[in-house]
Amino acid sequence: MKNKAYIGISFIILVFGILVIPKIIDRFKGNAMVENDRLNIAPKSELVEIATAPKFSFTNQNNDVITEEFYKDKVYLVEFFFTSCPTICPIMNENMVEIQKEHIYDKNFGIASFSIDEINDTPEVLKQHAKDIGAIHENWNFFAGSQKDIFDLAKNYNMYVGANNDAPGGFEHSGLFALIDKNGKLRSRKDDFGNPIVYYDGTSEEGVKMIKEDIKKLLAE
Image (cartoon, rainbow, N blue to C red; front, side):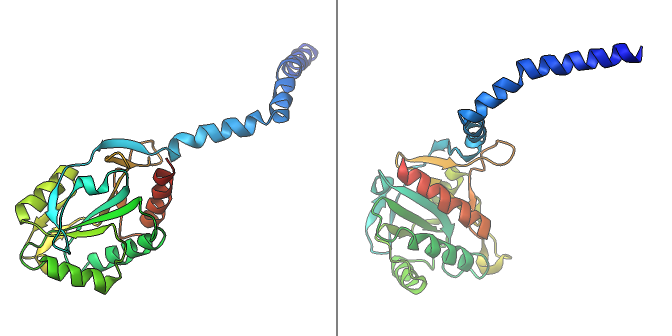
């Protein structure tokens, strides 16, 4: 019985060697295995389209009325903040300036920063704020507007903002950045489970690293 079993196993090994090993060798010769492995990871790096970015019309730090048409054919970031924010906004400012530096002369890149503090953040205050943090890119606009209109815009982006007298500075908001492509589409990469992350964490090193990489991808499209 043992001899028969050995013979059976030997036969299976022989058939495997005849049918499979030559194919593996051919794949190595043609570098097919390497190429297929690259293709297998491609979907994780793909930037998926989430939705069309909302339309808007607000006054910027230079008292110019700007709409979403200003960003046509540009890759740009969107954030909601306020200048007197004592918590996450300074971190967001610092990270946004860091991103700006990589595209300082790129006319196809831009940033849209919407203030959620209607009372304090006038165009004049926003202009000083831009100067204070080093926001010098010609396509970086700081927008002032009515609280209702700004809050409605944030809602259309599905990005949380809110007034709260008990919160530091009187407002609550996420520390997220939205990434918009040249065609006005909200874009993002996927997470490890294949789901769109939708927004990028503007307060973390990892979030900034990811958005830097993905800006470059969209600019190259």
